[in-house]
Amino acid sequence: MTTITDSTQDAAPTAGMVVIGNEILSGKTEDTNAPYLCRELRFLGVDLQRILTIPDDFDLIAASVRDFSESFTWVFTSGGIGPTHDDLTIPAIASGFGVPVVKEPRLEEALRTHYQGRLTEEHLRMALLPQGSELIEVSGLSYPQIIFRNIFILPGVPELFRYKFNGIKNRFSGTPIVLRQVYLKADEGSIARLLKTTAENHPDVLIGSYPSFFREEYSVKVTLEARAGEAVGSALDELQGRLNEVAAKVVKVT
Image 1: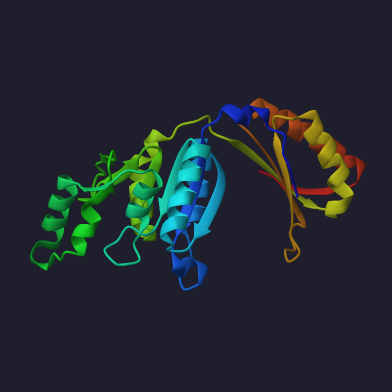
Image 2: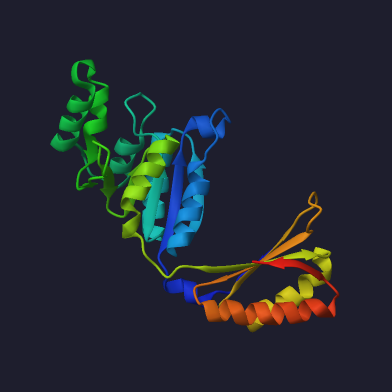
């Protein structure tokens, strides 16, 4: 259960992520890029509001990325930018915005240097970009990061995804989110009313309650989050006082 009325987050930078690949939806490959991006953006103070996983479908990629671009400050895509027939992200994004796909000489040179005598026409597909794209050099990689408008087009390979994001994450700066966590021995239903009251009294704080059924050390974890540490501290003080009213045992506070 999550109770949210956080007016301070309205002006914060927002993000959406589009994960692309039949292999994710079929279960052949586990997506680890989305959880990683969630953690990184939260640390940076960026509000990741939506994650969408879609197949390698040209029209769906085009429509989804365009919609996300209009809805969020930044968009991150994962997957579909290799040399094979099912790598559709680049041409689909270009189509979604009504721009042509163009060959980028810097990318072509990087590909020729990397593959040398092994270069094929299929490899050269990775030198194509939506017209108007920007390239950012990433230290340690010969292949730069692609940005089109507010869309960061990232590879699906987890190691490359993380390396490239680390190379550009200084671009994403907001007010970091302060998180406090309260671990309880309590029934979630018995604390639901006091959580609601605390949330109403502290509308700038996001309060979440997460039961655990298979842990001996605690049965409920309550989280309090906001971009102002004072607000979180005030809400935490009230919550701890109210927990005493229902005899909930606080195991630890972090």
